[in-house]
Image (cartoon, rainbow, N blue to C red; front, side):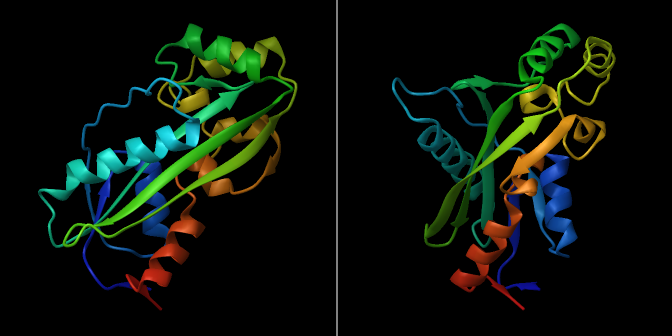
Length: 194
């Protein structure tokens, strides 16, 4: 595969970087800042699409010849968004809530042509069912570094994958990007050739 234009990944995520690298794509990676606050009454998919768009626009100014790819991911349980725990006790609470239950991972992405502002976007939902987790596992895993910087307090591509009983939808969406959707969207736009 070959990009027809340079690509800028507007995300600091090493997981998103790895997903692009699997396809042999070359890109620059930056970490743009954007206000990720939800607007009153804003539906989750609209919120994530808006934030991904803000990240893409923030990266656009310094990369005017590039395609800019940005995304935002959230984990939802019973309609409540679970963020990144940041510390072990918050991770323990999240994992206890997820134990034996099904939650939703929603990722929105925006691909922006920095030259003319043309964009392609999407939002992908994946349902993930956890095994019933013994308290000892939850305590042990919550003390690791792995869950602390991940929405929902787990990394499916790491040790956290052992907690998953079933996935309905895109696995890569849970990792960080629905890469299959992104690749086909870019091919459809002529931004990526075979």
